[in-house]
Image 1: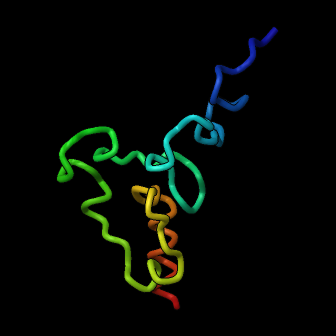
Image 2 (image 1 turned 135 degrees about the vertical axis):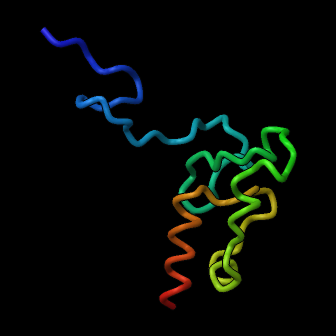
Image 3 (image 1 turned 45 degrees about the vertical axis):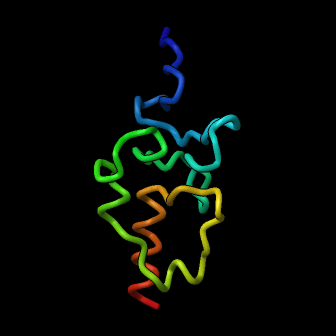
Length: 89
């Protein structure tokens, strides 16, 4: 008999799509998808250490989807999607 997968894993051992916990501060979640944005700055690290400081948001995408004042940044997946969308717009 097979044991059930560990929390967060699918039956084949791959990571499942997990939503950010409801208690995660808004500044630590992506304003587009609600997933954790993994921002090192929000975790208290120096700004130069965060991935988001090395991948600026394209201006046209920022104009289409303004970031709420209390949000930190997009997650990598959404930032890449916005970059791709702005390149084809």
